[in-house]
Length: 344
Ligand SMILES: NC(=O)C1=CN([C@@H]2O[C@H](COP(=O)(O)OP(=O)(O)OC[C@H]3O[C@@H](n4cnc5c(N)ncnc54)[C@H](OP(=O)(O)O)[C@@H]3O)[C@@H](O)[C@H]2O)C=CC1
Ligand SMILES: CC(=O)N[C@@H](CCC(=O)OP(=O)(O)O)C(=O)O
Picture 1 (tube, helix red, strand yellow):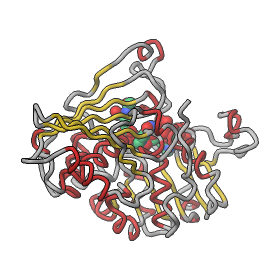
Picture 2 (tube, helix red, strand yellow):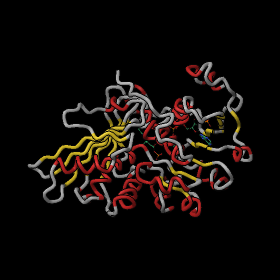
Picture 3 (tube, helix red, strand yellow):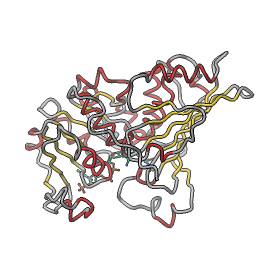
Picture 4 (cartoon, helix red, strand yellow):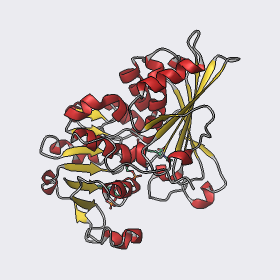
């Protein structure tokens, strides 16, 4: 397979390369830049010496049709312009940004404060939450890879919402992310002296993933409701923990919730519904494409606490993107993604 990566110098791009390096079908990987044409990748990132000693290429729209797969891992607002002319021109397009995730262009404009992609392009894209949308992914030329937080949130809640075991109307989702979620451009929020030994809450009621989560609940859980979703920045590099507090439907027990999750995700290699005795933390999925889920019921309040963890850069970005590539090309979903978590 001939693969191109646009945004290769960013965190998502780095993770794509790390996994594609060991992917048996990846024969050629070209790396594109908008700002550092000609620079050797390994000069920019010395940890890739002898692995990626190749110059970064200038983005040339005509050359891009030459690939089997083109990954784009760029800031919001780039691919809404770059990709529409490429749809159906040859390569399968897998976009890690938020530009094609929201089916209503007005929602994108409202939450991202940017001009949306053309409506026809949005309609042609498939939302890449792999475990829930495989049929559409297989047929699509453009995959809108999900956001990191929505991946963790939706994977843990959708089976329970779909089966009416919890009531999404009373749902409160409390999520925390490591700093790499903000990408590789340093800013006031990610500066070491302001993140180290600190905990911040941010974008209260304004996070761009709120409409994506609500859309996922409607599309796959068949229920339309606004949700409360709040994000926090934790002084760690990788990882997302999503903790949801959900009112239970009548006579629902912890066992019933666990059975539902286990049944839905039976045979799905990256979803692990963890036993009660397990320790539960972000490091148990560090560097891998796993999403681990843990559930507890409080009979006193009749609420469930539903927790999930992912690595934001892997299942939340590059790993899920490669999982989608595997689905698109009829490969085993785990191809190139068989990592053991880096726990210590
Ligand atoms: N970090 C995360 O955990 C996750 C990120 N995402 C999304 O994935 C995308 C990439 O994120 P991330 O890798 O963290 O971001 P980074 O900021 O780390 O990297 C983005 C890269 O995009 C390239 N770029 C910037 N402007 C342009 C442009 N105009 N045209 C082409 N390329 C451009 C830059 O490389 P160069 O200057 O060399 O062109 C840069 O290295 C974002 O949309 C992000 O929201 C999604 C899920 C999780
Ligand atoms: C820690 C941190 O800042 N995380 C980012 C994740 C953004 C992201 O990856 O989302 P999009 O692709 O939808 O832009 C945030 O909360 O905005």
